[in-house]
Image (cartoon, rainbow, N blue to C red; front, side):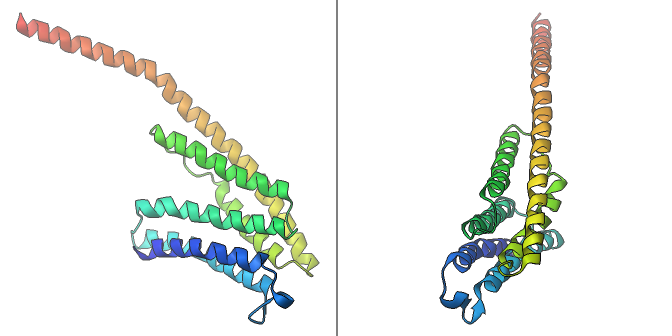
Length: 211
């Protein structure tokens, strides 16, 4: 396993550590003498850093593999879903907003999988980067927000940005999915007709040679 894929796998292993740090009731809210909010934020920050680093190294070293393309988005979804659900459990994020964000991830993954199975690749939405940055800001700010009203305000504002970007990008994916697949379906009758004409020409040529 190359280095970029190893970093991706390490991000997956950080997910349960993040959930334990955020949701376990430690005595005095301390983990080895450190406030658990800081530990949770550090774990999430480290995992988010590997998300950027594995992609950078894969491109720089030309080590883009099929395994990496499969597990990288899976690791991202596990990390963000675990963090957001933990924030709901902690009472720091509204459940309906988190449901929209996670639901969008499943919707987009499903649409892209269907399109890929039919030989069509749907490119990532430009809003994806905005959503990703806003997610990192929202999660870090909300994790550290207990006793910090300003961080709570920043986290809530960033979460609204995530929800808006999620809804707009989901609509964009659905529009492109409909457009691409509709054009493919519209091409099928013409392709079938061309195939029949080619078969008739071959049969005619065969009869001429026999004659």
